[in-house]
Length: 338
Ligand code: FA5
Image 1 (cartoon, rainbow, N blue to C red):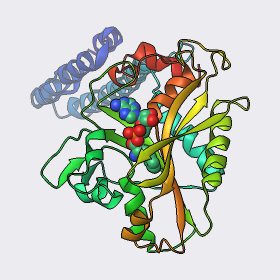
Image 2 (cartoon, rainbow, N blue to C red):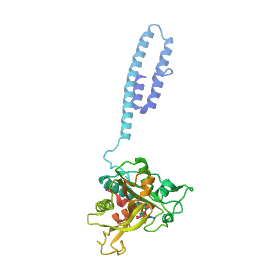
Image 3 (cartoon, protein in one colour):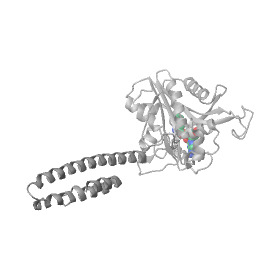
Image 4 (cartoon, protein in one colour):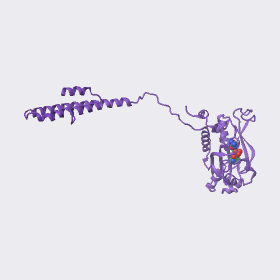
């Protein structure tokens, strides 16, 4: 029996086969137990001899079993390790990284320049009250200049802001007459304009406002020139043309000299050598007064530029809609890494 058991044990592979072997030879109903049970038929002299012999065989088999069991377990472990092994030499899978949208990048560049010029960043709501968007900017109901900005109304008193100028008023109210006040505010605005290559019904503006004693038009020009040169290059110039906004007096439209043709005339600037980039002016005394600043003591200048138009000029984009259709072939050209 011992011979048979041991040689069979050697042929068993795997946990289950091993277990079957244990049941067959060492189990309660196994062959060794059967021999022990049959001992009753032996003579009293034979019993201890045979009994001892059977126990010896049992412990030999148990030992052999434990050894084999260890071996099987070890093999199993090694097999698992082999199966789960990671090949560290395999090349990694490339994860597609995102990056800034060209508009966000332009906003950040503009903010950086104005922060360098001593401005702080301000924000205001996109869904705005008629009061801040129009009335507090010297545009009472029925004022003809309201037609300049075709408005998306939510209710009679609530609208989608048509420009970032309401943030001027909100900031002045918050500052409660404190000076100096120097802020820029980038943000989304909405107008019922028909979309074309240079107009979008949703676009972004960057508003600027400075309030202090002794602020003059030349301060406005100086700041805008410094901005234009940092944003577009030292060779660029600006020019102010008289204009009209109800919330500034005097008002100006500001042109940037054309970089593509160097001023000699091309398609980008429609052969004029200049491109309009923003509206600006000295803050109207009534606007200062309504927001809590005494116009006898304080003066301010303000400007509002279309960020898409700035981005189009800086990066040579010929259609404003490119910023909104989210074609990745366009957007990926603005990756700052490779
Ligand atoms: C204004 O919105 C004034 N709030 C600007 C201002 C601020 C004047 C502070 C004085 C003091 P205007 O409507 O001109 O002005 O718009 C300013 C700029 O926004 C334009 O020069 C242009 O660059 C951009 N813009 C206007 N309409 C659109 C449009 N539909 N799509 C894209 N850009 C536009």
